Amino acid sequence: MQRRLRKAQGPFEAKPALPIIDELILTVLSQHTSDINRDRAFAGLKDRFPSWAAVAEAPAEEIADAIRPGGIAEVKAKRIKEILEEVQAREGSLSLDRLQALGDQEVADYLCELPGVGPKTAACVLVFSMGRAAFPIDTHVHRVARRLGWVADNASAERTHDELAPKVPPDIRYDLHVAFIDHGRNICKPRVPRCSDCVVLDLCDAGPRLLADGAAV
Image 1 (tube, rainbow, N blue to C red):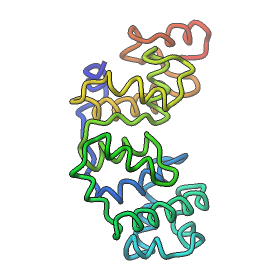
Image 2: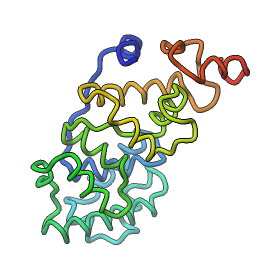
Image 3: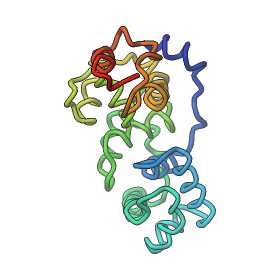
Image 4: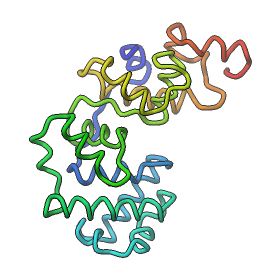
């Protein structure tokens, strides 16, 4: 699976690692928007405020104005402010570098205790910032996994994370996560997937049925 996707998509490239607190906020900004708009929102936040402490002290309305390109700005601004305030209360500073000394599950448990942080966000921090062998289940990974039949079609993202992550070999989790996202965006689309162009069609539960039903091309 991973080898076929990688051959079709080209070599795997890891993204530059950010500090843990930065990756956490970036992941919050990524919810319900594109990577481009997420990055614009993050850049707006960094341009507007000189530090995370300044963000934590700012009114939510001001934070929302800075992250407007990312969508649902008021909701995300409130969440970011709550997270930063909680980190400050716990750590005495706005740094999560201490988590580097903890095990994967300890890090995930800590992050999931923060306001609005769930398994997907925690997994993103683990893999992208900390280089740990996590397997985030975003909307594309969730869709591809269900269509392949790797989890039940009605499996929630949380259930998919619990069932699937332990089955993916640790050394390819980051790579496969990125490959599934690319595959989900360009081939295994939510509507009218391009099953005829899929390099793993013979391994897929849903593809032949979607083609037969005329729901795919």
